[in-house]
Picture 1 (cartoon, rainbow, N blue to C red):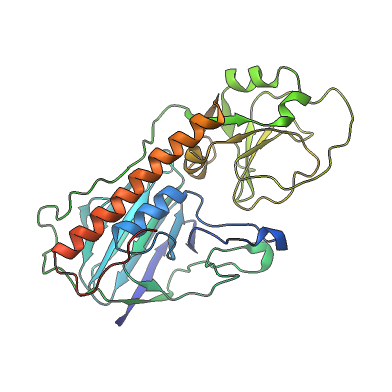
Picture 2: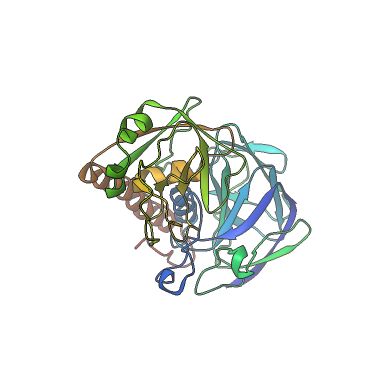
Length: 334
């Protein structure tokens, strides 16, 4: 094991430490949190031989840049991005051997996705809250990666005896999502609250909604048509799942994110399918969204197919690294 320093030379708009979030903490009133795009974060870690839930770096907008003081194995996933090492273009969604002293720069295309993820083989040194590195500003746990800071990494990686810019080393079954230019489609399963607003199902499935600048880590606020309950009956606040479609008193639709809490007494008319949550995690201001109603069974089957693709990637990556003589066994996906 050795310790490598990553000097942060650029952070764009907001750069934070992330992982897949907290487990079993919501009963204490602490949201799950974690990477907005859990698929991209999981794939990034697997591509460098880490467990899926390892700490990595999430960048929201602008340009992320860093320089390692020793050779490292890293990858960039998430939104489409221009990635360079030492000034030369390299591929995203693929493991990269970055030599010591070479600057890595990642410029995401904010018009096609909001977030990029950078994972490095090994364990990033960072604080945790309730077992997770995921930030929670309301708990005073910011986890912001600042320009000019130095991030320490414990790693066993010592190189594959490869030179930069040689032909691609890896051909792996990477499940790269599509980032279409037009409206993104989000599958939604109806919830019991849909019966409280007659006609809302038809309104939602026919409309195009636009993510507003009022959106944040708690949820996406969408401009578009909504209907409200025709009674003033009180709705008791209760816990809600990630991806819940909530209709507040204002004429907007809210899709709750990984830092949501209670309903605040607003009706919940549906829940985005688990397979669609990464899409919501990449939706920035101005992004158009359309919702497609689906059955729970179909939603579960789609998520199971995506999970099978991720597991297959984990096995293929471990085998590839082993064949290349990685000095220690790499962790396999759970």
